[in-house]
Length: 138
Image (cartoon, rainbow, N blue to C red; front, side):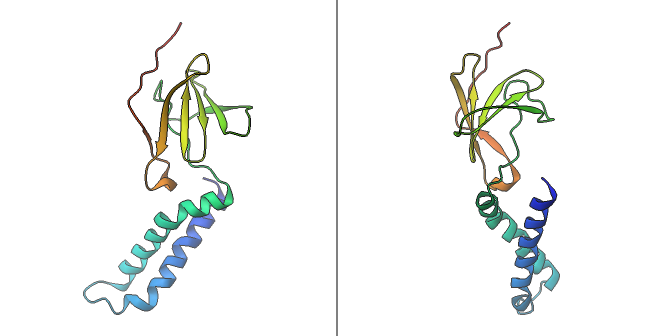
């Protein structure tokens, strides 16, 4: 996440808090600050992905499905307009990253599996559509 993305999400958070301010004092038994912060977080969770899509930003890349590397260290491979090809720097597994999905490619460019973003999509949590196995070739 870069500074511009952080500022956009922070603006959403502040807008959610500002909308909650007039209504927070009418809710009994809860502190106003708790209601305002909750509304700010809800604004980020519900409207953050729409801001990402509108600005053309992508979610965080998934962990490598082959080696499970937590660093998410990928090299970008030049590709066509259908997505961004990423190659894991550890095991050389190739992913085709699209806005809300990722296609796991095999050694010969065939599709091995699909990953989809889970809600809330802004956090970049990925899940496989169905279980798949990547066979290691030497």
